[in-house]
Image (cartoon, rainbow, N blue to C red):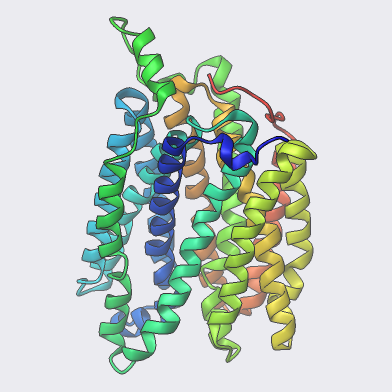
Length: 410
């Protein structure tokens, strides 16, 4: 009788994988917690909706710096060092964000926070997936990407349980919310020091001993990799645009509708976790990476009216689950797909560059939604058109690129 798939993964592989998952989950927690306190921040610094949305935009833009920089370093010096630096960096700037005395200061700190956030993904995904059995990469990809929804889920719980005790002083409350991930980050930093370096990267270094090493960033634009770099960057731009359109302003939308956010955010992010695993697993069995993600995105686009325009709590709850499971779940293919598009010598910078250039493209969605709302468009309508545009972009771009299921990482 064949053994379960999870028993085919060694204890060391699981340790590396789960530590990376925890670091990515905390990364997402520290980013998404700010979405719950944008109203308090607006009051503290007397800024409009567009500037409040720009706090998310600047973080996402600076993720490009961290993703490209850490990816380049991960290819040259190994995966672990950049991960440890990224965890320390985003923790420091999450803490400093809570000390901000002006909007400009907070804007700067959230931008610098983004460097660490981008670095974590760029070095962390290769570290985890390069140690994983190839035939189970789809489910590993789904679980890893689900860490982002898990982080959002945790921030929802912390806000729901912790904020009421602080709400009497809103100016202090949002600061304490931004500090909530500092102590867990110290624990995860320690755990990361104890995981193994990528065996694929170590083997490549052994083979290259004594040979001149070219900067991996430049290699991305050689003729054989140029299309992969451009295509994956645009694809990730569409993925991120879709995601940011559904999430950054969602707590504000729920507040406008006089709904308590916890149940909706639990369904949205539980759906994202389960959907990422489901579509990641499906990508190994049916339709490959492209087919599985396309199915999720089509269902997500069709769910947008339920998610945004339902007039009852039941309809809104259904919409939250559908968007989470389908649209966020389609992300389950992303870590595996990007890793399969680039060889080991440039996998860190390749995945980091494409993912975070995509983040830079998608970063303008929160700002655009805020600006449209300031100009008189209903928040639901502004979110709807950005969701539709992002979802259709993902579907189109997926089929302009190759299928990668079954590729060896070499």
